[in-house]
Amino acid sequence: MTPSSPDPNHPRTQRPRPSLEAVRAEIGDCRRCPLSETRTTLVFGVGDPHARVMFIGEAPGKNEDLKGEPFVGAAGHLLDELLAEAGLVRDQVYIANILKCRPPGNRDPRPDEIELCTPYLRDQVRAIWPDVIVTLGNFATHFILHTERGITGLRGKVYRTGHFQVLPIFHPAAAIYDRSKVDILHADFTLLRGLLSPVEAAASECTEGSDHGAGKPAENPEPSAPTLWEDVK
Ligand code: SF4
Image 1: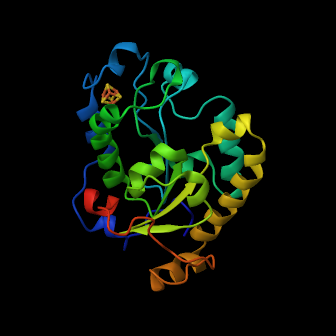
Image 2 (image 1 turned 90 degrees about the horizontal axis):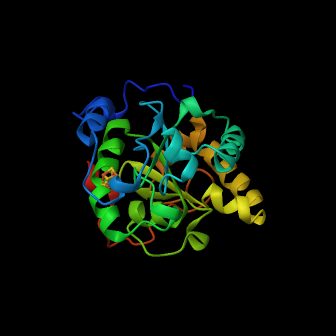
């Protein structure tokens, strides 16, 4: 099985779920939060609707806002380079953000904006039903894993939340300004490559909660918190 080929036995084929087209239609010309007043383009997401790997970033930046696509510009080029490390190209994965509209000046997303926008992201996850969710930076990681722990302490390990394996990594944009993070990102994409190999994937299915396929323990940073699995299943 290639990294993007649909698995006929995958749970996502056995339960009703929204289509990405339906989720996009539901968003429409969303005006739920004030970011609708300042955006140029609503950035929904891009990629394979049957991807085994879904990347979740923070919010559109200036270039993304203009082009309507996530991860263009320098951070996008780095992401393409990292995908190659995992044996992937963009067309084989799906990329979306916590917020669909650009915060002015690239400021951090606000809690009320995250609350209003993330129901769309939950539906995107339900539609794609990936095996692996890669969270880029603190905001995506905090939302997916329901934790306040920082990305520096969480990266380098794989977490299990229901069906999904979650791999938190530094946001590629952070590595543009701090080149010391580039080598760390390459190491984390090597870990992703291992997760996607048939042998490792089979091993992780058999060893949930114990030794992980890459030799690291699968763990949840906040085991008592509600999980993404409970949100989307
Ligand atoms: S950021 Fe999300 S909630 Fe706010 S206007 Fe854009 S799509 Fe709607």
